[in-house]
Image (cartoon, rainbow, N blue to C red; front, top):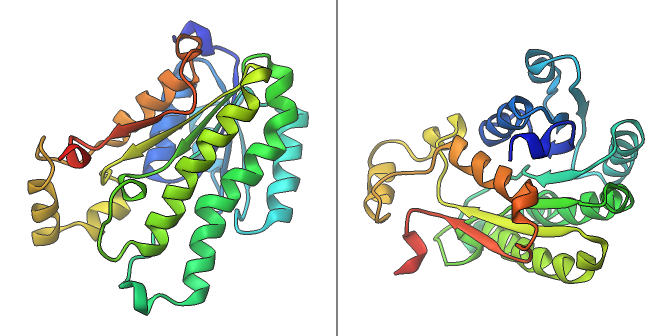
Length: 244
């Protein structure tokens, strides 16, 4: 699979975060050319990984930003693999959510992946073996308290994944999702620290949260030629949380 992804152009949104960085490191080590996108400047990460990688600042809540950046990436680098990794997690009881928080969650977690995929489609077609990987969540599969906006957006993303897989298979493009449990990123470790985190881990059969590298390796597989028969699937990486 490593040789298979050499010189492939991989666009990763949310590249500056813990999962995005783990993905960037893995794909770069395999010889891929990376287009790193984030609202926080990913240029330091691109520089650390090597001169062949590029970085763009993009506000995924703004359709104009998505159109501008995706066009530049596609024109300058091509797009063989699109990883919609960026996400926003605002948690609150359903009745306390503001309309603004609801709308921003849907814009970043659901609308942006759709817009990114649509903008990338001409380049994915030209690739001859396009791949889209959407990072969803276990919260899109089962009810988790205080996750109304987040869970709704991720459930929608899983549904979007299936529709795009159906519509675009004729172009040789596969579209899949990954639904992790809590992932041990710096931000998540703050939000799930102490007693709250201990209780959450106790409810996971394997007794721990996921590691960023585990999500990265799953995305790596779905981006590979060996996963060419896999499309419209939601790969659940939750330590068994949703099987009960």
